Image: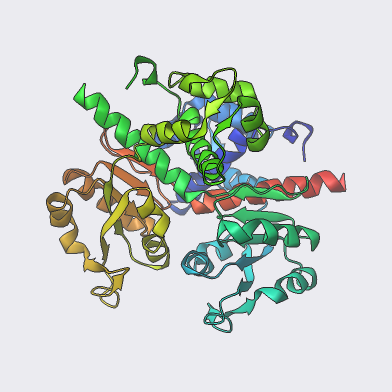
Length: 216
Length: 216
């Protein structure tokens, strides 16, 4: 990690995956070099924003003739930790948990599904892409014994807090939280929330406001 | 809409659903009034942030003795457009589409699932909570004839752009986009993106950075 990589704002971090996505598409399309100006037009952000964001990581050697797409793609991938593999489990094997378990793209990025858990006897024992759904009682041991980095929480908010605490006690390093509740975990355990209801409400706000503006 | 409700930043809007969630829980717990100080401790944001956010909407009458929880909950709900109902469809009825279709909480907030669509003959004709999965060819007519406000896009990025354009041509007002691609739609159509891969990569970044910091 370079000295200036410390203390990078979460806003910058939040934009990295989007750069990664666009650069991957450019690479797949056979583009070898791109200027910050062209990247700016493609991504609809200012060229100065792009340069500022990249300067957090040393700038990636933009020359007069632009960025090397393959190099930039690979470097951003490394910064995102995608050059390593991460074992993960899914806790809560209802519709959403199974949908995420079936999402092949995660595997392509190095996220390997190792186990799924649920308390519903009707789903325990069935499989998602060859991965078995196990009873909740086995979760703690499984996390300890299988080098699990990430737990995906797709369970009701009433049980999410208790489950997250158990995961923390058993050495989990990161939680991708889809439960509709904020988790308070020891510092050092990374949490990324996906609150789908919040996202839908934000859409509803923008829809409602636009309608009111039209009526005025 | 009050005069100062115009031009409210998306960052403030993005925080409203979280206020709404906490106030709903306080209300359900029978709490009648809460000071910005107590709300601040509960939500782990500063009291001054809370007051600033609320001042965008006229302040909600905080007095010496705090906010009225029920009133504040209802007012924020109104701002979010949750006092109205919104008809929505789901386009793409794979695992994720079906997971969202089964999510009852959306209905409690006034989002009414009216139809689902897919191109896969194996799923066309089956139902999710009584709502039929229809062939893609019927989508445009359905949107026009059934007062559909919101379309949820849970389909591959290759088809998402074309489908979004068709929805726009047929009067859709908002798109909740789960496809891993940015949509360019006419101004006036609200788009809220949920890029799950981006969220997972952000988690991966924080996990990787923390690990490096520990090693140093």
